[in-house]
Structures are given as C-alpha cells and as structure tokens.
Image (cartoon, rainbow, N blue to C red; front, top):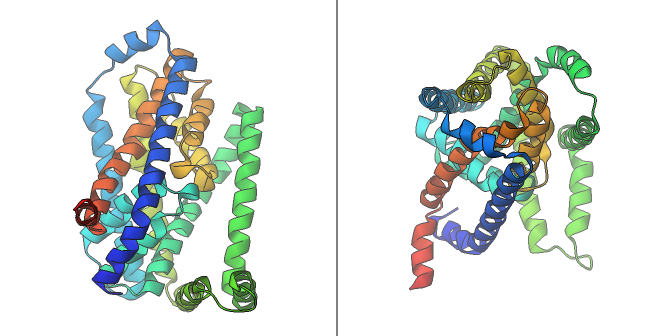
Length: 350
C-alpha cells in the first residue's frame, strides 16, 4: 500500500473519526455529570480539597510502568510470531493509537486496522500483525482466567444484585459470540467465507466489499496457519507471555487502590484487584465508544459497598481519567502523526 493511497483512505475516514470523537466526548461529559449529580454533596468538595497529593506521582508511575510493560509484552508476542524484535516505539503506538480509535468507534473496533498498519510499518506481515492482536487479546483473557477461582467465590458472597446479574449475563453472551466466531475462523473457514461472500453480492455479482473481504480473509488464512504453528512449536513462548501478561496488569490494577488511599479510604488491596478484573473482563465488548458510561457505572456499582456515596462518583471519575482518558489523549496526538491527519486537514482547509 503506497503512502498516497493510504492518505486518500484517511481523507475518507477523517469525518468518521471526528464524529466518533464528538460522541465519545459527549458521552464522557454526560457520564461525569450524572456521576456527580447522583453522588456529590458538600462533603465531596471538602474531600477533594483534602486529597493527599503524595499519591499522585505514585499513580502516574504505576500508569507508566503499565505502558512500558505492555509495550514489552507486544514486543515479546511479535518475537514469538516473527522471530524478530520490533521497535519499542512502534509497540507504544499500538497501545496509544489503538486506545484512541477504540474510544471513537462502537465496540472498540476501530483500533485494530490502525494497529495492523503500525505493526506492518514495524516490519510485520499483515497476517502476523493480525495474529499478534489476536494473541494480545487471548493472552489477556488467559491471564484474567487465572484469577477466576479467587474472584467467583468472592463475588458470590459480596454481590448478588440485579446489576451484577445483568453484567454477568451480557459478558457470557459476548464471549460466546466471540469464541463462536473464532471457532469458525479456525476450524470452518470455508463455511465462514461462503456466508460473508453471499452477504456482499448484489444481484449475483461481486462488489467492492467482496474484494475487500477476500483480501481480509486471505490474511486471516495466513494468520490461522501461523497460529497452529505457534501452538505446535512455541509452548514456552506461550507460558512466558501468560506470565508477562499477569505482571503487566498489576501496576494498572493497582491505580484504584492508591487513588483510594489518596482519598483516605481503606479497601483491601486484593478486593480492588478482583473487582477491576471482573469489570474489565465483562466489559470487553460493551457497545458504546470506549465502553464509555458503562465502565464508569459498573465501576461505581462494584465499589459502592466500600466507598462512601459522596465519594463514589469522584473516585470513578479519577480512576477512569487516569487509567483510560489520559491514554486516549496521548493516543489522539500520536494518531495525528501516524495517519498524518494534520497535513490532510491543512490541505482540505486550503
């Protein structure tokens, strides 16, 4: 793909990115407003003024550690797949740019194409880049599964409300759909190809969508072959990546604990970890851009029994801003560079 052709595609996608960004910002403002309206009191402002700022650098260091560790995890997966190390900066772009485009597209689906582009620029084949993104998600889920034997007994005793039941049922449905699609890709690719092809034909003729899907399926087929080769020959790499995945998310999931300490609230450390693991495991496929609104609401519900009502909204806002919105802001700036959208915007204005 040439630079020129890619720029043309960016011209087309720019309005959708801006539209998605407006929706994301609107949802964020509405969410923050509702959280404060339903939870804030005079005590909220008093508590905000009394925040122990000594925990602010700790929180930022934890976020930085997570980003560094996650970049290394992406490098490790790339090494396992392709046999070579890719630049650390490209791995960081995968995180930041993926977060930004995931935030401005439904079901967080927009990040993958840009991440594939970044990885391809780093020297990976498209099929290898697709496999890396699949492994990144699957190893994340595998790492979370390690905690399930500890999480489920905890939640059976602590939570039994309707909100938790709805969240659990949604997550079960989402994962059943995901793994059914993955099963079709891995073991019934011809059947899947036939279904997709038939849905893109118009009056029995191929369309532009048919050609695009053909190219995507061709890369998926290559990724499938690489996946089976990985499973067969690289078991030690798989174990190393799972261990790395667990280590990666310890700093990220520790941020909530130290925000609570800054608010002078004591919640057991493992409780904060378990609640976030459950929420983010269930929220993997929420339909709103960046899962905005649903994540904050679910977070407030999970911590409602441990955090005073007048602080729960502010706690959810601080946690979400540090762990996600900061990354999205940096990702937006990097996305402008990666896609060269600033140059395209100037050309259009001129």
